[in-house]
Image 1: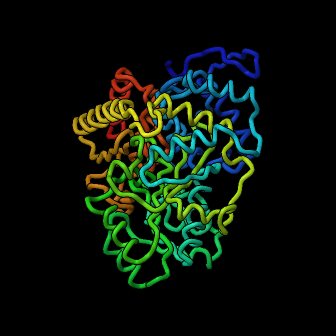
Image 2 (image 1 turned 60 degrees about the vertical axis):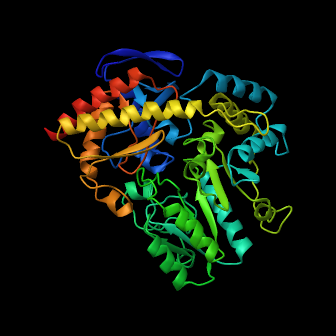
Length: 457
């Protein structure tokens, strides 16, 4: 749909003529600024890193979004990862409708919780028991509390550019929105909390060993995204995850994989199955909620039974295991082919299809970038990738930060103008869904060819 065309759009059930293709979005966003900080409920959505104002979304269908002015976009954000089936998949919508008719929340055990737990335990190699929470932040926060309670130690080690939610102590040199906005470590985090967090460069085992040498018997756990996805997509170097497993075992610390993004996106068993390394604790989110708020953490029975009420480490939540989120998650995993009887392997055909579509898209983007003589590095793992505007390989946060963020911002604006909706940050992952077609790939590549020429003009 071309921009700048007059059209009639719905306004609170009535039709009003719009002559500017962004007028309604601008009106709503301007009103939102007076009511919410930056006009948004999550910082990167404000588009400060790429310029301009964000379109206000009215609805999504399959791989596409439509804003309140009627503009349509091919979506590679997918609610930042959860919508692996695309927007408003009919099967998930039907399941949610039936769930809502039974009740939206009970604060009591449900069969849906038990079924979702069975699916997670069956699919993820390292998980024997799981607990559901309401967000990825809550999952990582709870997992770290459990790690500290289990080991009797206080320190944690994270990696520069890794984002594990906004809990105190995890924002030191964090990726995602913190990196996008160029913020220092966040005010409001007590110095004593920040001092409990050690930092190392991603993919640097020597730095990890040095941290354990400098703090013997003090580090409770190492928390890592097995595939970094909040400094842009950065895969683990050969031997990195295996090295973390060896070092943590040697020093009596736990290894925590933050698979909030990668879990059930890279395959039925997540990154740990892909790379063959089992952590002690795993954090999940996004895909397992089918687009509704959800998080989870799990691990061995011996560790998880330290959680109340069976153990002494406390965590609770009114909406944890919410039946709507559980229903959406079960529906999503079922459509992906993971609803198999106990003991039978999952059907990973959906993931092979996702990988094929994403590879074609990433490869063709690399071709048009070469033709336009624009230096880019495209890092891809499965159905997520990042186009870094740099001529150097990106292997860690320092490499990601050397990318040309201004060039990315111009590219982002040029792609949005051509109907392609990208993450509004150089440091986020592009996501592909099963709803994306070859026609969507071709349209995206054609838009990118024009946008890259515009960027260099």
